[in-house]
Image 1: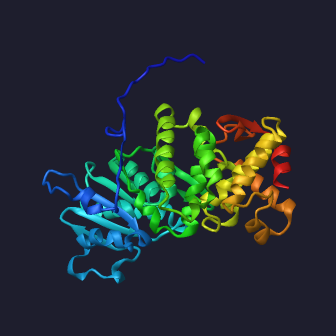
Image 2: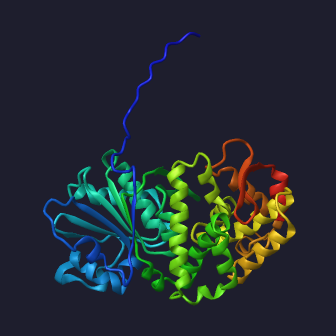
Image 3: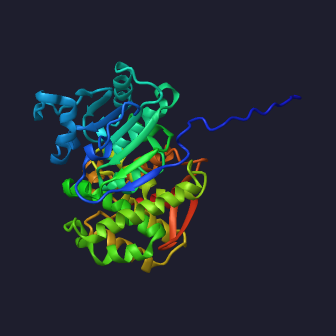
Length: 390
């Protein structure tokens, strides 16, 4: 069949998403200082989004009071609360992975619409990866693209989720199945937030730190390997160093490959295994970081089985992961508790991996390593995957 073809060229669809300004702040987190240090009538409307946990932090109280006035009380910090300060709007969502749904995204959109939000509005996500992912996604679909700024409050969101423009929410039992690429215009990094995190959230973020070190910073990995006490020493200078290193490394990668066509795929080290684990255990049962850490151990074993690395590499990785308290065995206890049979567990995880959005064929794509800082991306046969899951 013959055809004629016409090419139509377009400018970038979303002006303002061509660059991101990342600001690192010292001292206590001060949202009023960041967003209200200078009043201006010409400033665009802001749609602030946070969750019940972040809204209840002592450092957030002066900011939350802006939207509650004299009626402010801890009782008002509940999911679904909407407050106003002038044209600015504050929406408080429920906290955690169970709330990372399309319904929550639409709550953000509704809060903007109910308050006459325009395309010039700035959607500001203040929270962990759940809040930053959903707020940026809402910005990307609101009137076909508004503006976005992020304030990551967890270690995980500082070093990973907020940087790089991936947005979205979970769907059914699968992680991040709905979303878009929509980089924030500004990211405000306040490392002091990590001092307020529950232990499991802090350790979850540390898994992404270890992952980034394995990929791009052997020097940082050496430091983490020799100082697992960082889990109980959040004031250590190594925490701030790790955050800056990870942000800079990820920024370098996404500058070259925003939409994950080549080298950005490396950032998924441990994630194919980890996302399958999270999905099959029930989203929120295993933290993202704990899933990724277990996934990195499985990736190391798979790297060895395929002949990419040495046994010494596998032992070193698993020893480091174990020193942080992460599971490194083939069968994760959460899966054993839920499903019992080990063969069934392996098959369930394999089936979940087949649904991974990063796959491009019938085979499953994995990020593996030859050594620290030496990474390879390859597609793997089912029998090799099952081998390291048994």
